[in-house]
Image: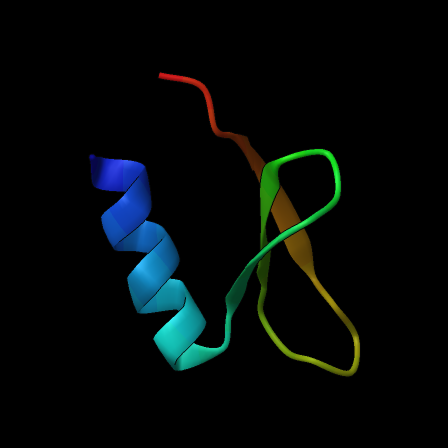
Length: 42
């Protein structure tokens, strides 16, 4: 699954986290939280 790879890589880098709705929140930096939401639905 591509999403699993992305999630693992993101978690390692600390830039991608799951929010409570099951979306992937890609945050550019931890202070300002610039986020883009990607639906995790295959």
